[in-house]
Length: 515
Image 1 (cartoon, rainbow, N blue to C red):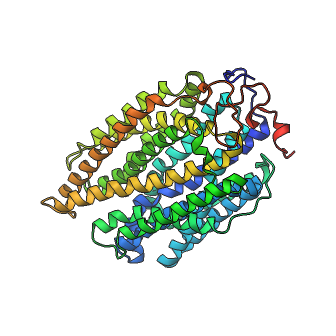
Image 2: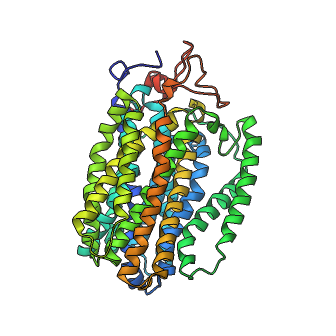
Image 3: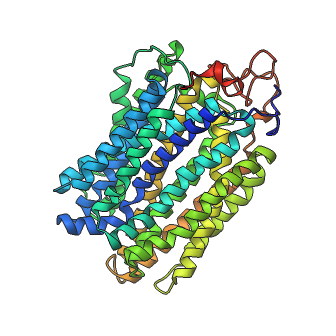
């Protein structure tokens, strides 16, 4: 098979493969949707449990901290644990955490429930990405990555809408109660349709790498998540301490992985960074993720605090953009498969940049329509960016390192999301505090949010400069051994005629399919 195989010539997915991917997509959508429901619900939960903003924020901080700690372990877990077992563990943790959250009698129990939910969520995204890379033929990956964009980008956008609707009609416990039956149904379907995609490897886990990864990534995410709170003067831990601990642990972690990967025993194999095209596409993805999640936090906050919108109206503000993003995901994927990344990335980066500069003009007089239109513009840009960037990044990685590439991408997306939120909230808080009205006034908040979006617009200009250099993996020189685990790299498949990637072999050579 040629590295330039067209979509029409690529083998179609079998019914079993479609059901496998559908189960993973729906499961991942549900767990990520839960991630952003807190953005609207936090004020209600603080009032219900009688806790302050600094304490209530831990429902988000602990979730991000757990995600940042667990995701680095998934590269090893995906190779070591059978796909069905890992899926059931992930969805079982999420369902258990959701049930506990719905019944939580005190704030501490709700916090533990969020940590359990995050443990399951952290496994699902890398598992989905790795499965797509193993199962889907190269020529059809763009379309499938478009569906993943629906999950990764649309679910966070719809979280505030779902949360606002439930809060307005049923109460906060039903934010979790409404998700529980869906999670249980997805778990049952996965038990039937999720099948092995590759043989598990009997590798030993390096016991030193695990605490280094947990402390390193966890401390970094915690430090980033705490910056905004520190800016308000409400954080007891010095802001520099988590960064010092995190960086020291990460340096030790990297040194350890470089030694272990020579024996194929790394917890997180860093040879993926040697794959041609991976670092550039990863960097652009992280900038897009930073601006996206930071905006998804600030827009609802601005709507509620500066424009005095109720939770339901705030949720509806993000709905059109979220729905449009979902509709565009598969379309963008098909365009990528047919035309490559640059025809999408250049206009997408310009749309994101334009939307952020438009949001930088907000004030207390900004209307619902203007804010919703800016969010729609941003959503279209994000939809146009995320599919080609993730497809190029993961498609550049050699097949033996798919699980590690997915784990690294997912981990750094969490760090980028925490960094974007920290940066935007800090800028907003500092500017609002220095304004005549102060951080408690509508005018002060509006001024702070406007400045934060101006900073985001400047960051997006870096994205505009980077994306013209992103190329489809198949454009790498012929004769490059794509399956070489040393990370030398890669087209979308081997071009020397000896072999093709796992995604281009018949399904019966790749996996055992349940009857």
